Length: 309
Image 1 (spheres, rainbow, N blue to C red):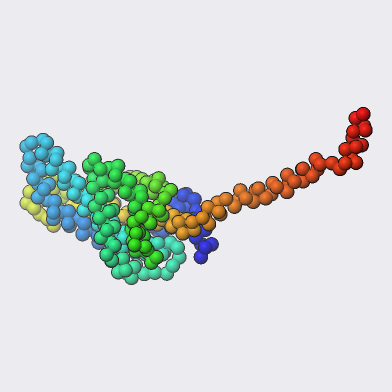
Image 2: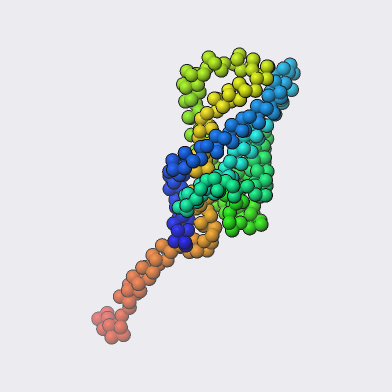
């Protein structure tokens, strides 16, 4: 067991990223169904709750009120999306983690175990706080800080050996990996951005532009045609829906490495110092040989003194 932990703890960040993409390929077919389900539920909730608010913002003649209502709608839309994203990642996190470390598991069984009282706290911290932080608001920096230190809550809250203070334990596990976590999120966002750009530039314009142009959309909005608004949101968000499992797959190897280092504690630090210790052991005999070579016996010293005289 300790050997496996050492192997995980010693992984480089490049290997962590490569493992994440391999894990995405391995788990995709099993993960895509729950992710699609929760993404669709999220869209249904957004359309149902925010259609009237969005319609109200378009009817405003005052620019300040228009901007306020528009940004409020965007913030609430992002908040709802974040809550459902965190929820589905919490449900599948244990399955993805066990798959990565080679433990046999089933997705449905792990999803059932994931529903517990701690899940509410995780959704409040990550879903609500982070959702408000990443929405168009002044809370962007606090949102990044919460993300960097506490995103591993999606794993730790449902751990077998979880402690009562699992929030502080999560911060300890993530110690030293803040920028790695931000970098993984950046890779996911950039990947999603370029695929979405290609989709909207080519596929959407070719296949759906005539059926889903702005005039038709506003007609659905004014008439509160919820079904067509939901279909519109699903079609425009297809890339993000189908790539949603990528983030949890990229994050799992990083969490596994951080968790292994946390569990090893001082043993991990000692293994890092072992190469230097071995070098010191190799150098000591060499230095002792040099010292012994430079040392001379008393007879040799007398002979040398007589020669000098």
